[in-house]
Length: 416
Image 1 (spheres, rainbow, N blue to C red):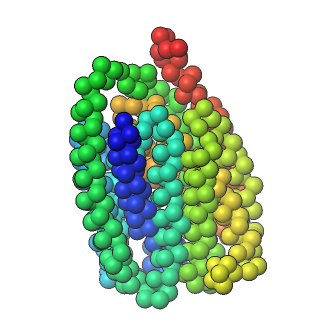
Image 2 (image 1 turned 120 degrees about the vertical axis):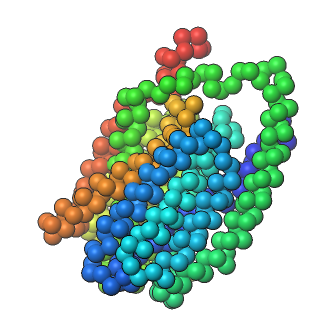
Image 3 (image 1 turned 135 degrees about the vertical axis):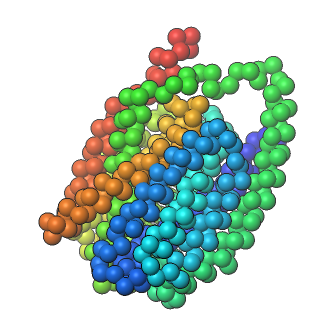
């Protein structure tokens, strides 16, 4: 048993390294939309349609891979998908056509989409009894990558222009190679352990026996609607700020996104070590409600630095509010994924894609519609009030969810 637990921990570490790498790659261009438009010779907002197509394809592509993964296991996709993304994202600086740029971003996004459902489900199933904690650690690695990615991408753009993104190969290719080798090695050891475990008398009774395969439609609807408004600030704040701070360097724009993503990471740590499965519903609705205030205040916050950490990292009202907003959101994100996996045990990859992908794609469409509206009103800062209202909607939907324990008892009359 000790050997089985050790292999599970080793696999989790490999998955976390892969997640960190993938999310650094995926967020290098988050704050570079104005620079992409300049690179393509377009006016402000000229590449917005291409950007929307990329983000929606990236997010909703997870549903396809999640659905496919529940029927055909392709473990190699955990490293092959990111490897494909590496090539696509690293060469965007060498294309000068909006169509070619959109195609490269879409293809790179599909590699990211292929990775997430399989990796998240594998991480959660490594220890079903500690699913929330393990998914929180998996999510944390992604938040760390998202915290680094925008600043890293902005710095690369300032120093070397967009073609400089080919520097990704120097560190990303070795990491993905190690991930692929380690994943194959540890997975083989785990499979041997599982075969031995199945020979035991109690092997026929698993965690899945306590939850039916059919997911309640009402619960999934609430989870989906709440999820759309949960992720909207996460995807919208960096992009809106990149336009509001148009006179600043790409490094500064990226720093705003990095503060927010760092907050998500801190929240993920709190989830891993401070919130258990018995508080899932509370964790889903209360932080969302608390997020409303700092998110609304971001729109009027000053970005003039109070001081610089280590003489480099700026600390200002805007960055602090972004950090606080991220912390509140980060606490609930792993529980959000875990809840869906638990009520869809026969389709965990699909559940993961729904919470990690489709909600983001749908949120992207609503977000850009909101951007168009507030730009038409000549009041882009007003979108932060829209984000804040969305957090309230998220809190209400999450509050209406039934606790997992109640669902199990209601669905299984013999459960005690």
